[in-house]
Length: 136
Figure 1 (cartoon, rainbow, N blue to C red):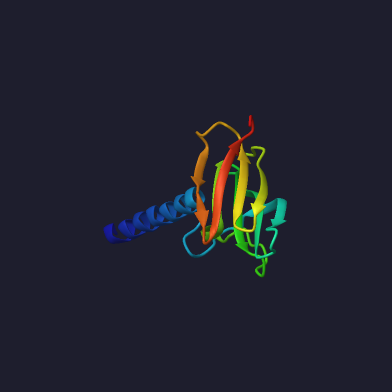
Figure 2: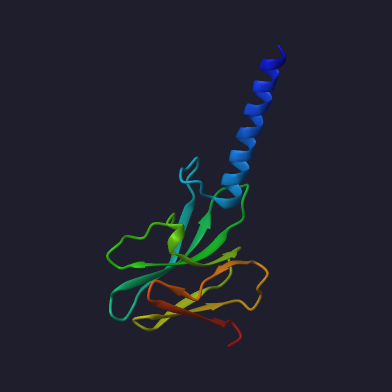
């Protein structure tokens, strides 16, 4: 009897850890639930080699919206689950804009508030990334 209770308790704890881990980090190499991704802006670099995309990611009621900027080779279709291509992520639904200075320089305009920024890379492959704030 004790071993059955132990197995049930361990199974429930494991399930909770997996679900919390998925909802907190959104990715374990497999998906339990799909996230909705709404593209706000998709912009090719001037030379056409890369594409940058601003999109909102909604992974359900237990998580907040996240606004993401991803960069990819233009030959690849946009997929909102390619976390290696995320160069900027911010909690909520802030006003984010992007523009290409040239074929290898992406400028991301973001709010001045830094508290909700999870990721803010300065480069991706051979693309340099710089940031301006909404007040600039």
